[in-house]
Image (cartoon, rainbow, N blue to C red; front, side, top):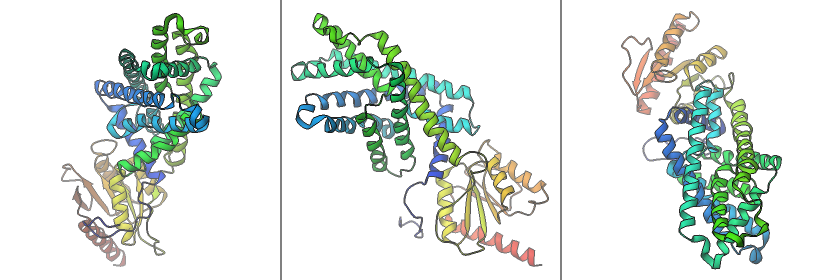
Length: 419
């Protein structure tokens, strides 16, 4: 695929691959954990509002639908329209508790502390609750539940009553599978390169969880309060059939077990599993996908915590016949060099710290086995004049210059070795 701005590069499938998705998820987890509390809270209120709007859309669509198209298709329709909530969260930008369970990937890699994870989750959970309940309150005050001769209200109350009638363990298990699917939807979005990609990645996992009757704690922060408000408006007309629909049951029979289940499903079944597969120590140095390489191709290690930059560099250099590998921190770069010494290292300055790349250069130069390793240092910021690398290239890098510099250093190394 050619962009018209450079050479045509054969890179395979035009989407991030799972190993790269894991790094993007990890890096995003770090940024979320470091975000200012006020910003997190406001974005969390938005997420609660967005999920509530998806739930409201779902309630409208399923009202009176089952007698016409049957149970299964009604559930499918509910899932399709409920997808609006996560689409708004991902594309518009917001902080959702269930999706933020993936922050555990950054924690497992040691890039953030447990306190940072709990701080984010607590603020986001509270913000989601505020946004959801506020939306439920305003829609109740709008009288929307009276639409279709009151049928919309009856549907909302029936949904809420059924959720409050769950026992603890069924609610927890339904929560596990719900957020496994929600976090898989978020995970798939890390492969996306466009808004269309993200929307398509979201629709089927979210439709599946809704159609399957799984339980989502943030969605229930809308579904149940709005049902309780409508029940109160109905007064004596509510009848004995709605005895499960109480604030106590909302908290103890739904919100608590569903939240626990959501956390297990998202953080454990998705976040920890993918961290173990792609990010645990010893597996972070990955071979770049690309063209078939000739035997004995020279190896270049790209050490940069920006997966977009690493992938672009890998595509260019792989196309030129190099065996390109990637590591996403100075620590992992050092491990990769120890496991398999590359012919050249391309190294970013800012990673774990503002000078992690420069520090790694000095460490490599101080070690007799790596003292002569060709190193190109790259950065978008100024670096010390005595950085110790063979060359320095400023970001954004002209890829023709990158290829020329790599070739020059490898040729010089070959001449030194032959002398």
